[in-house]
Length: 144
Ligand code: AMP
Image 1: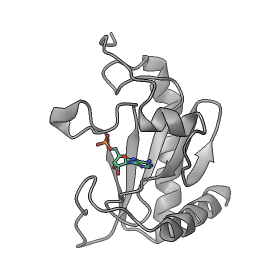
Image 2 (image 1 turned 90 degrees about the vertical axis):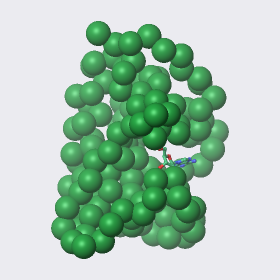
Image 3 (image 1 turned 135 degrees about the vertical axis):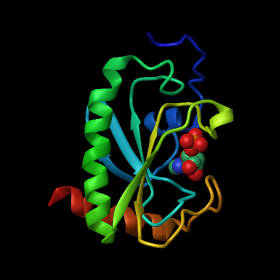
């Protein structure tokens, strides 16, 4: 059963979902969006976000996960292709103790390359032009 916690509708991803602040979007359907992480842990680091409000996995309606993970898989396949990656890391954090910093459920999809470690979580801002170029590569891979 989902845990009852508070959801702040002014969190940054809620604002992106409402179109109040910009993002480098790669995918959208009725239930899910995907956009570039602005502080990527590697090139092509993408966030997959359900539109339904929940703080994280602990309080989400279980019905959220099917559509969400269908898109996580689509995006994982697309980023692997777009960046010629050797693998893909999927990460998801719940509450501050786990490393969560934005309190709207989301899944990290990160292309991985043999021998190259992940950069720090929430580390350094990437240049907007790099994010835009990477988003374009992922949109192309998703369309083919
Ligand atoms: P988490 O620790 O799982 O809550 O991660 C939140 C992620 O959101 C981090 O990787 C941040 O780099 C990323 N992030 C924060 N603000 C934005 C934003 N405005 N657009 C895209 N990604 C963001």
